[in-house]
Image (cartoon, rainbow, N blue to C red; front, top):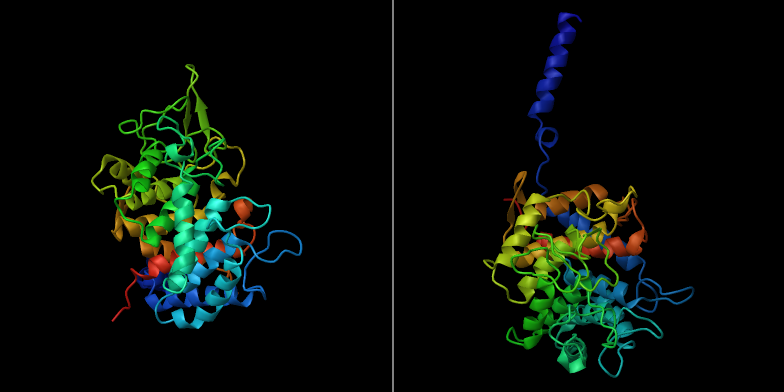
Length: 395
């Protein structure tokens, strides 16, 4: 190599090293994150159904309550400078949703399940759009959620693993509580203004604790033998667990903790007014620090031969991540790789994954509706709202 070429190569190396965007993954300015949000929100509004809803629940059946609720939540809680822009879309959607509210206060479609999810999301959508205007509908939905918690009032006793939780619908005949439904119901009840002293939260804290792999605070029930890593799994009743399991010689079973449920569990404990110094919260934070990554739904798919196993539910995880860490109240989290600014970490991850048109899609795994761009996009909108609250405008 000639002297001139050597000099040019050395200069190129120095230039690369001196360029912040190449030498280090730089923080995003609030204006950049706001632009991401607006592009996504504009895409969502553009595909809103004529009847005000989003999504579909079958051929020719326009409108799905859960998808619509998530879309409204994301738009209604838009950053202050954009909120008015999406008000009309939210109001139109709520008008459609209210037609699906039943006499008992729940929200559901004809001959469909997922009532806990749909009622919770409808409640939060109404509360964020206009709490005063929809106060009666909100109160009815909150009452339904409180009354359908598995407890003595519907035949579920304290020793039952499902006690204090929620399942997909209201039936207590075959209770099948899971952490995902419980976390959604708790968030809705919290946002409804339910008193912190309400026994719903105390019962729920008991159920949430039973989903944690923390042998200090969870001695296990029935066949469940908790691990001791501090994370959370989906279902303590063994009915439809999504975690990988380990069968023991004594007939017990242990489930792997995974990120989506661990963040949902942390959020739920905090919504149940459990103190940050409580061993359950500290154990969850320890798991988060040890398994920090936004590249995968960590822990999901352990011992699963499918390549996409840890990519399943990735955008659901991003939303749980944002809700939990905002509830935790600290922007910086200590991890195995050093201190992490979670709003920036989330925003940078979503920026890399956003498509030019503004939407997101789980290209690695279509499971849990994430192969449909509407679902990952409404998850991301809601997650970005949480992050934007903690990303300051640079002066």
